[in-house]
Structure formats: structure tokens, C-alpha cells
Length: 445
Image 1 (spheres, one colour):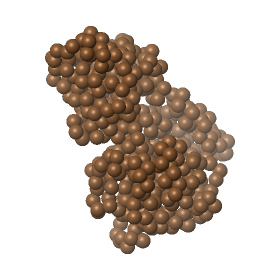
Image 2: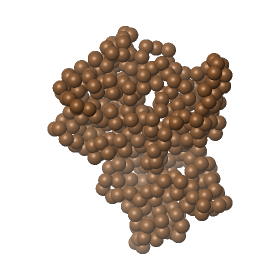
Image 3: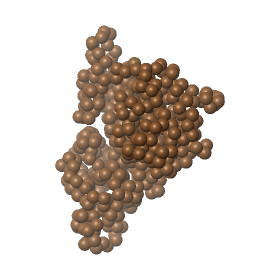
Image 4: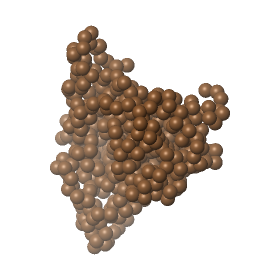
């Protein structure tokens, strides 16, 4: 429940204790919000990104529903959305990374009822990680364990200083833990990247590898951990780093008490993709013959981890799931949204808390413009402007409650600061689902 005091009069200050920031995957749940006249005026303990998320939040002064760009009632919007989704032969639902888990669950249900495809933004960021986990397995832990136990902290292809500003101070480098009582002094930080990012300033050891050579670098480390002799000239040529540097790192990884490597899109979306992540996960698995070592993806959006979890426990797969045959099928590249649209296959769609019109390829965007689709977003975007039906929804974590998953798969409750005149994602999707079921003649709860 929200820990807040309700002001008796307009203009009086309200404090929301332990609010949850849903900007990035850290999902910090220790933010104290000061709210006055339905405006957040202070966000204590929030990082620079969190402050921008909370303090710049304004409720859009626009209709809750637009049909073909014209104001309409919500009921009309629900009806039209259901007709669009049930009228196509290849409907696709995409997004979900900025919606609470309760809404995500309803979206997966709609995809099932319409024999459609459900996909999340994971397919364009950490999708290769999900594929690698299926092939290799994962040695994992919570951020609490990292804080209490981690003495070797690595970041590979990730720049938390800019993408997750409180990562260092709250979870990985600075905090004092049960077995790291001196905080930063008890930890060694290693950063591996193709360029010197702002995060590199926090590293004890920064290793700059050749671009697009992550797989070779990881396989080098795996060989060294397993006692395989390597040719120094070849290692230097392939990775851009001397063999002695890799030998030193391998020894550090084997001799630490509790090691963790956080990896980002610099690893997953470069040459090799899922093979890179498979190499890292295999290296992590091998290191557990010597010590305790784990790997965690540094996820971006506030609830993209929740989207993966919800889709997985509803369908068996975390993204790119097709229901056309009456049961879930998973095949990245075939059922992922950017690919489906670029090939011109989908004939109707629903975009939830995402903006593919701003970041997909031109062939994908061009096809999306040609088909009728539904869009849900708290803000006006290029995607909502082109939608046949556009719903303006309340912002999760600020105007509505629910559940989100932190990047370490830990569920966190949301504590809203003030209400919105617009409906929540869950409310809109629930109403659309009811109408879809009615059109399909599906009875029961």
C-alpha cells in the first residue's frame, strides 16, 4: 500500500514514502516523493534520471481515446480496438516494457484469444540473452547478494554510470555489505568495453577490446580459466589486448570470493549476439569450479524484466511467441515484431508503452503505417499519432500501482503518487479483452 499522507486541502504537501522509480531496470524503491497540487516537486534519493522521470511528469491534456485522430469515448475505443485485433489474420502485440505485470498478463491473454503473436522490447535489446540462457543455462543471484558478497565486480559492454546511475552506489560498488564491510575498499572493479565510457572512471582495471570481438575475448578467458595454452600474438591480433592482461584477469576471476559480471547491449547487440552471451554464460559456469561467480544482464526499461517473466510463465517463452496454431511457438527472427513488420506480414497490431515508429527500421515503420493498429501510451508519440485507435493511459509507478520486476528478477510493488484522469494500461487491456472474447464467442472468466 502507498505510504502517504492525504492532504485535507488543495495545495498542501503530501509525502509518498518508499516510492518506486520505474525509469530503469534498477527499480529503486527507496524514493521519497513530495507531491503538491498533483505535481511532484521533490524526489529524495532519486538519481539524475529518476529526478527527470518524476519532476518532469505531467499528465497529458488530451482525450483518453482517439479514433483516427478524432476524440472518442473509451467505450467506442474498446469496441474499435477489439474489432481491429480480431479482424486480422496475423495480429501482433508488442511493447510491454513500461507497463506493470498485471497489464502484461492481460496482453498475453489477448494474444492467445486472437491466435496472435506477443513480443516485447526484449527482442531488440536483450533477446540474445534469453536465447543464450535457453542454450547454456544461467548462474545468477539477486542484487542484494551482490551488495553483501561481491568482491569482484565486472561490467562488460555496459555503461551504468549513464544508464543506471545508482547501480554503483546502491548495489554493486559502494555499499557496505555483510561480507564487504568496507564497501568500495573491499571490491575490485573491472570494466571491459570497446571505448572508454564514463563508467571506466570507476574501474580499477579498464580493458579496451577491439570492436565486434567480444566473442574472441570471452573465449580467450574461458580457455585460460580451463588451463588451455594460447598463442600471445594471435590473442593480441584477435582481441586487441595482450595475452598477459587476459591472464591476469582470468586469475583474478578464479581467485575472488564472489564475482559478478553485469553485461549490456554492448555485448548482446554486436557481432555474435546470442553467441557472445552464450560465451559469457559458459565462462561463468566454468568459473564455478574455482569460486562463486554469476552473470546478470543490465536491463534498461523499468519493467522489461517483468515482461520477460510474465510472457515466459504464460507461454513458456520470454518474447517473440506466436499462437497461430493454437499453441505457443518461439522463433526469434520469424516472430519478432521488427522482422514481422519489415517483411510486411502483420495485418493488425497493438503497441503497448513503446514507440516503434521512432526506432524501428524504415521498412517496418512503413508497413506499420499501412495497417490498422491500436496504441497505448502515457505520452503522445509518433506511434500514437499514426494509430487507428490511440489510448492515453496513466503512467505506471506515478499514477497507478501494480508490480514490476527489478533487473535481478525480484518483484517490486509500486506506490503511486497521485491519480490520473486517464485509465490504466490494465483497465484498457481488460476492457479490450472482454470485447475480444465476446467477438470470439469465448465464455467463462
